Length: 339
Image: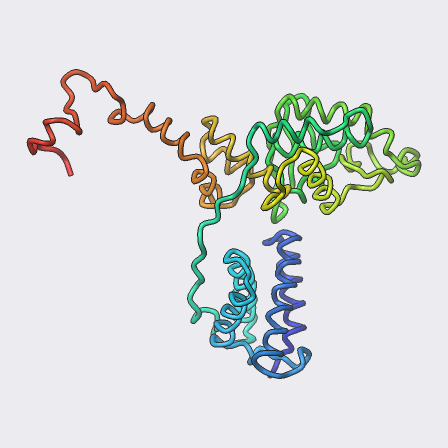
């Protein structure tokens, strides 16, 4: 029995959406990536219409050719890996469902990608961005709160856009966040972020509220969106990106390679540079694996050297009396030591 790939794709997306194994953004990305894979099959491999594609059209060879094709289209390694991950996940789904007997993606080696070192803002650049925001206006108070919150918490843009007023706990200084896969976490906030949010809620947001929202008795205050636009609607991911890009330019910072996610990178890097432990940063960022968090250790070598010199007993200049010097004569004379 043949199965339409288009229908199987829809079943796959429904499954990962309902099970909440992937975030909403990841589900959308998988949909686009599989759509691109299907177009590749029709145009470069099978010559069929996309509606006529079946599970039999997915072979190890066509997956390899898809990877080569993406590379020739100048996609970055991380993007290619994500697109191939979508295909692999889809093939595992087909195998679980019994649509195919053998997973064709298992016979395709994983693509090795170069380590990506994220760009970060310096503390001076963060200060410059904040300084160009006009907090005399309601929108300025909102924008100041957005930048302070992003830098203070390391939230993803989608997480920030989804915040409600009740998610910020002022007494404890925490924000409750719903991250990827619907997982909740609590992230501490600095006093400057809490102060900026408070000023926005007291002096900015009431002036942005729509008449409908003000008159509504059904929507509890704590369930209202934290950040809204000039029409009183929840601020979208795209709007937040546009706002931050505006202030990056206004601060005289070259926007090349920068995005709102750069504030998240800066949050993690500055925490580690200040002495925070990797596990705590992992928890605050909401990373499922500490391997994802470890990327930030590559952008702070000087701090690591300082920590090593101050903490490791063999890195100190003055050795305790009676202890052998690993750089001195004990080792040069071939003294005994453990391997």
